[in-house]
Length: 198
Ligand SMILES: Cc1cc2nc3c(=O)[nH]c(=O)nc-3n(C[C@H](O)[C@H](O)[C@H](O)COP(=O)(O)OP(=O)(O)OC[C@H]3O[C@@H](n4cnc5c(N)ncnc54)[C@H](O)[C@@H]3O)c2cc1C
Image (spheres, helix red, strand yellow):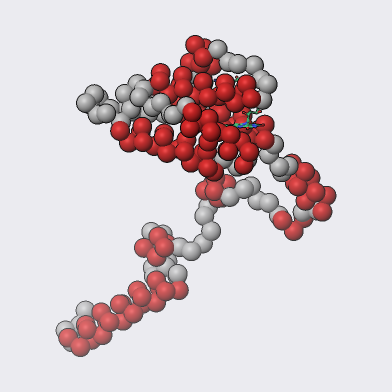
């Protein structure tokens, strides 16, 4: 304990410098304290528990052999027109299955835009051109879940017919493409309760 005010001031300045130095170097200011605030901003890698969730399990890329590279290329074969078609129809019919009975104005606008974009951007030019013509003759119907899913079934059948495939019975479309399976209906898409919205 000292009564000298200058010495007291010097001690405060000294403490302050030590604190800043400790933050800068990452060393705890007080080794006995494990909760020093500089640990919060640690730049060290995440713990193994966290890193196993974020990064692939410790892969040593220095051991990758040319054979592995060849196998990888093999498994990344280009997607076929059929696979692309099936994936897209799955997306579209699931969208229709989730589409609300009373969609909002925005939802109706979005579906129309999506179909228009699909007819321009579908990554198979011939299919896109054909679908554009299908849309021109069969404008999208987005008034309700029933309307949209039946319309989609209808245009899918037009594509089916053009490819010599079987026509799907549209009365069975809800049985084939039910709502997305999701715990506690957490994936359900909400429509509007304002029935004046048209
Ligand atoms: C917008 C669009 C345009 C396409 N245009 C062409 C094209 O011009 N030329 C081309 O070669 N390919 C085109 N395709 C791909 C083609 O439609 C098929 O996806 C592909 O040939 C694979 O057919 P698939 O027999 O496996 O069944 P898909 O036709 O892909 O159908 C997938 C599943 O949907 C169900 N399904 C079938 N019909 C209906 C229906 N009407 N309603 C509800 N469910 C149904 C059946 O369970 C079927 O197994 C297009 C795809 C899309 C999405």
